[in-house]
Image (cartoon, rainbow, N blue to C red):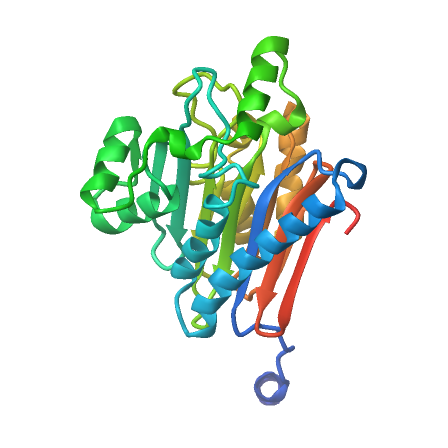
Length: 329
């Protein structure tokens, strides 16, 4: 009798499991999230004209990536497409308009990662590649390696028929004035340590990808490498877990391994992306650094987290877009 009662109860439990509907998850058709750098960004330090210019530039980047996703393209293609307009815009520190090293030249870094198989590509210290993110993508797609550095990275990009420019192409008066000030005062302001762009996306098939690119910090020592080209520090993507792109004081993001820390906390500790990002940035802050991250998870939920005063950021999906700059937005 006891066995019969147990069997009936077990059958009832199985029936209940089979018929009870699972809670609905708000899964977007596709989604793209971008950042244009974090740092000291306040309303009283921004003219209306400059704010409008940043807003327009962020919208241009969002639309470039969204155009890929709307047409059924991959998250990988979308993050690359979103980053390119920011590399071409002197408002950002990522390509044209990148900061100068202490030696008065430009050294650019970039990385990209595909969540489908965790394939990745990166370049560091490139000086002649117009769009570093294209070089990082070529390393991933066209070589057996993950990272190329310096002249080797430039030569590899040239061998792949990417657009090559003179280093002076990246020059702007604004960045040269910043270099001269830092060299004269021997002090970097917070803004001199920041300036990175990035994107994360989920496509219609649920694939994740991330990309990050930068010109580094003003008056950096020649050959210095920050977090932006390092997989696991500024960039990481794994399907079903999360995709991350980071921006901030790179030395601290390297020491924490911010991007991988966030994804591991989601994967292994069961954190939400918001929780995981706050923990990782808390570790950065405890070491003395600041900055921010954009994150998207395997269901398309996204997060902006930063411990600086602001971060240029935006999101777009099939329902619309949003852009923000300041910390109170």
